[in-house]
Image 1 (cartoon, rainbow, N blue to C red):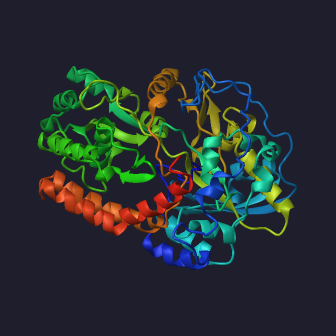
Image 2 (cartoon, rainbow, N blue to C red):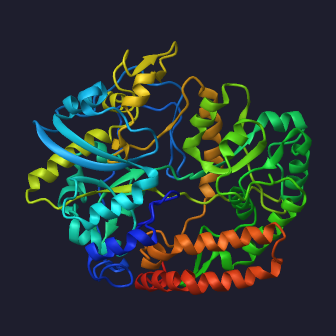
Image 3 (tube, helix red, strand yellow):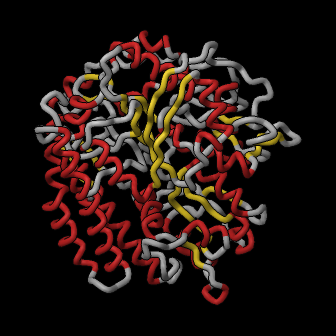
Length: 543
């Protein structure tokens, strides 16, 4: 089944943006476009996958989703693009950033060097994450799209793509992608998310299949004399009690939603939806979910969950780094480097290997979404302009360890980064500020496992991924577009979870969960199910 899900951090439009975007996109069916059918989408010829061979990892990846691993940054930097993509042309792009806005072009030697290497004048608009939703809606509603745009899944998304963005089949389908070898190095799994209306409509920003880790403070486990592999819920509860000491301001668990994620895995909840014969059941509707709720209530009553964990502003990373919380059971795998950087080397980071509730065997993980987002190219009068943009995006997608990747991520040696004793690259203060352009949301390669100066961390993560990924659970609705999901699910799900946490804290009876589920179904769940099932049935209920 073609995969249109952007992944764990999918950027969904809120109600305020939907009206603007709906007007720009035009009329649409419930699935977003009369052209956007599963039957048409599954017939699309995907780009040919050609793995880049210029840089060899120390630990190989595999088809199950285990990422390749590098112990050191490659000393020999292969060149993956022989010629500059452009010849002095100007291109514009828009993406969001999570950091401070970098210096402008006239004061940013990294940006100047990037333009020189690309052979273009790249004009970049960047918007802070808090303002991104409204900015995206405003840009879409206007008549002046940038050439390159980081996309959000919004109301009538297939219609929006069809009306405002370039279909890329003639440039990228099948062997045509060989003109852009770094884009061809992006595996098939990621391209499936770009398929709408029976065509390719974007460039994927890939993420690893593992999705999330259950991070733990292994040093606190050692100090408490407990195993980092509690087998089943009963052992997890006893472990949590041993880790918790309110007098020392220490609790086993932090953010309550992340704690529920761990329990969902242990109890075998589906990956959002469970499909049987073309019929869908959401995880909220399952007995496994009710068991997870009961277990979460047990943990809360035992006092092993931080009392402020329900707050939406709970600083879970700071709490974890400071030793107030011992388990952060649902954070992105790319967060490893951030934890290490913030730990100042004074603790031992580890991963919790979860078991089924009865402790009989390891619990299955769920596949993460294949992409962070996709990149759209606005409609152009000239095919040559599209080819220029694709050459630029091909350069930006250079694989790990190549000459182009090194500059894109680390800039110029001596200015933006220094080289450590083992060849690892470290950004300078100048580099950290300069390199904050959102070009990684225009085009990117898959991030491998690489932790500068810490090859043992790479080994640990690679071993973990190799153990859990072969049995990972897929989401049967990946590849399907639901307009209800894009427009209604975010507020409905927030309302559901806010009320659920009231039950966990004992402020509402546990029996109230049935009313919550009924309300969620009426607000969005049944409508999403209907839209997804209609598309599933076009393929006989098969993914």
